[in-house]
Image (cartoon, rainbow, N blue to C red; front, side, top):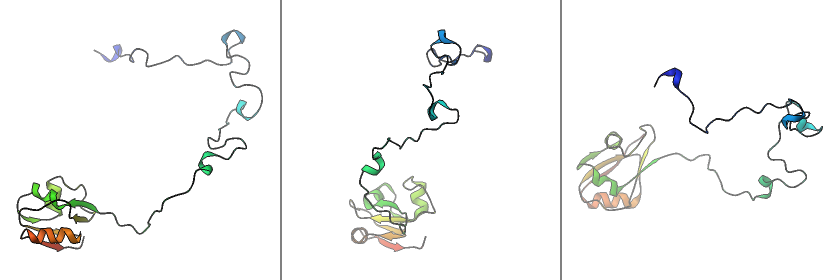
Length: 147
């Protein structure tokens, strides 16, 4: 294979439509744009939301939901995920090294889903009540650190 022999895959390209080339071409005279009106002019851009006089779809559908502008993003870790780590100190650095969290600048919250068998000293920005009780019941510690 050489650069001068490269071709697109069969059927992946089409010939360009040459409009306004006489009545025999099928796209002569008005070039497939119909007669008069804005759509026949160059520079015309159709408003996709407009439906004539009919109420547009985006206005017929009901509004719903709520976006909390004060929401603080957190990365979630469950206590069941801790079993993948060696017993001892667990911080955001160890979680990042294990591939359990993606970003170091986003705080980590530990939730109480699952069980803990080993003793861990977990350092995170936030804990749920069940997570704290399960970590302490296994002989570990839950320490809140500022992120």
